[in-house]
Length: 256
Picture 1: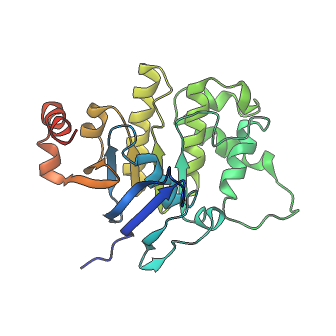
Picture 2 (picture 1 turned 120 degrees about the vertical axis):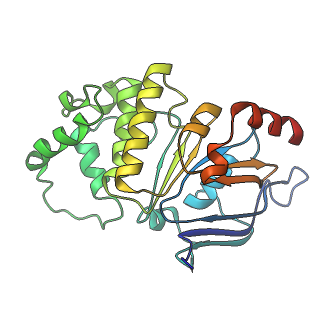
């Protein structure tokens, strides 16, 4: 039997610890993720979706349970250490990029993710042709703006850059936190198509939070629903393919 890539075992995460306002956001959550899984994550506001990503990424420390990567407990590893194997794209296009650095400089920064910082020359000019080729895959004019400060890009271009930066140095785990939610419908759809193509081509292991039921059904080989900090629904393969938006709406009505 193949060993899971990532496992969350009985994970508990509380906020406002040891106060009258203490709340358990993740409630003995269990989740097994296999290499190559593309999992769409659904759940109402407050269900624990972003907290799940923050726990995996190390931005929030868990109270109990285990997070295992290839069988090794990483529950208490720092965010910096986890960047060696994990990348994340946020909902806000402003996050994930350095606004005063240009597009090419941001890509160079992404390629050095997880490496020790040194005073070695950047040799940025030698990379420009390659970066032009990479950014051209986004089909949104980003390849013509390599020397443009990231803060001057459109929201769609900036989010496309964030996605490229996250996948340029192939991560073991890719977290997409509603990465198309802040974009207009057409730009959102275009980025989703490109996201799916990249995940399939690179055979990335990916979790994607979305509020769009259609995207949750269309993309990925697996779908999970979080409710009150637990995984209450988990389908894959043919069972996922048979799902409809009506069935999902019905399920949400039952658990609310």
